[in-house]
Length: 392
Image (cartoon, rainbow, N blue to C red; front, side, top):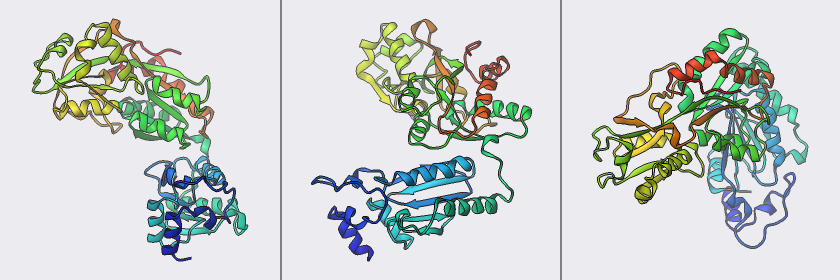
């Protein structure tokens, strides 16, 4: 079938007829937009710097076996393989299919080379065929036999924890030279989304406990593995030129402070505790109409540095953060006015937790325990976290 005809069928909502030969197809949708149009066109799993990239072109609906197979690959090669799951029933996925001159309904590519075609239902390949091809690509890319999954620990690290993580990693590896730590560094909610979608990880170092609730509800975390590693306070910051003439927390209700950036209290801990602090300080009613909520904690510093907000409450530890483990914090044109009194809110917990999809098992929990040691607490304190704030 030509791509032009295929595209016409997609627009006509006739995808289910075309892919009837694929495994586990759902019943035809009710009149209206095809269900496939509501699904994402691309899902990414695994480390961004992996040397082996596996692309699979399948509809995301009714093909659960594809994700099960992808999970097998990631479990075996958590640090060496990245998977791109392209839904060719979406326009973007179909364009990618056309660019690569591939046929629909069943393509797996490893580093750009076609490994298998068509569908599992046709019986022309097995899971082992693909796993063997991936193993070969990993060996070619890395030059040596990779470590067993149990000696690789994939750690999801929020940007605000990259600094202490770098030192914790170095100390842990010194004690455990056969273990390899692989960090995925991104904003907290980005990492939460990736874990929720099934991306492989062994340990999640999370800024805040509120952020973990959706993952706990979906059983993405190992129950009982949580450890509070540290806590962080809140601080009031303003642009370097301080256009609102803010000298204390009470000054944010002044007329010159026209915009105040806060984290979303429904989704991130820095937002919830900031709103609680302003309410307890008797400031909320005076400033709430000037508040702009942002989704990510890292955005708070950015909007203040760019002068888009005249004040913000941020994690104190984020004032010393670096996005690159082992490197010094980046300086921004912001000014710290004060640390928010601890009696106005609950300091935010930094939580280490094992991820249910992880392959490292005891090794991952061992790293969490290392991060909770009294000696490790000194590292957190160095990076602006509260003293004596870890608990078992």
